[in-house]
Amino acid sequence: MTIDLPPPDADERAHSERLAAVLKDEIARLGPMPFPRFMERCLYAPGLGYYSAGRTKFGAAGDFVTAPELGDLFAQTFARALAPVLDALGGDADVVELGGGSGAFAEVALRALGDAGHAPARYRILEPSADLRERQRERLRENLPQALAARVEWLDGPPADVWRGVLFANEVIDALPATRFSVVNGDVFEEHVVDAGADGFGWRARPADLLVAAAVRHLERELGARFADGYRSELLPQLPFWMQAVLGTLERGLAVFVDYGYARRDYYRADRRDGTLACHYRHRMHGDALRWPGLQDLTASVDFSALAEAGESAGLDLGGYVAQGAFLLHAGLQESFADAHAQAGEAARYALAQQVKRLTLPGQMGEGFKVMWFTRDADAGPAFAAAAEADECNRL
Image: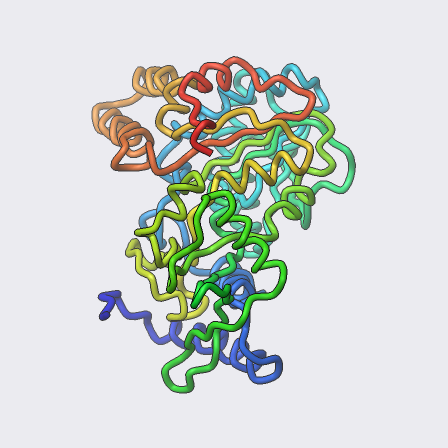
């Protein structure tokens, strides 16, 4: 099938060819590459991966738009929801944001929390990309009062010391390197990437190892049926270990995940037989994950049932699972909109209305994106309690 995409320019093509050469060299040395390794290298290889190189990723000039890039309402509403939690946890409470993107969420949320008198002791951003880290640093230094900007620090890994506070992750789980599996004659195979010469890269299925095979069989037991012959999809067998690594040192607090995806029975529907793996390139979505390494975002939808299991296995209490639109409306989006609307001119008021539509309507981000939260020895606060009226945990 032909995919109609704008071609990369000469510099972008050369950049992609450099990463492709690195990948092909590894394949030549080690054999077919498991897709999670290919995805990780395409996204995060130092100086060459999609998130590690210098081209703009977010917003109109990039490849896709995240909720914080639409405007201030998303972050302002979450700041309203998080403020009582930080207040209850005390003056030493931190916020840890996973994958800070352009820094848009941190900028707006910190300003809103500061204005309300609930600024965290530290705002810590766990950002693996040196390029994005520098962009975040510059943005926050230029746009925040010095006293607030001074609270921001960057982490190379999850907090090593015991801490209390709030962890926030917007569109993070979908970017974790996903395992691709397929079922052939009842047996489980794992998808690998091979060198296809002048054609770039190709797929090759190999018998799955014990971990992947066991994960697929677990899915089948949960679903009550075997996958049909030829079924192909994704999973994250590393997710429980990742959750423990990220939240293992949280002593008291709240962890919030916002992402697009499904409950398990919807994720692995019989008619979704080629999975959810998707690529984003210049605001076009397509399915050729092997094209132009380093130039496009690779992502897979989130199995929120698996996320709930991983959180609980890490010793957290599942608080709720709610569609993003319903969560924002219960958590104070209308108040955030009213405050901004009162201070805006006519053009800005129109833009604010468009933000609300994008964030809440079912055909936009309102239904496909979900909010899931966990607690540990803490109360999630009134906004989350209100949002729980729209809880969908029974679907998990």
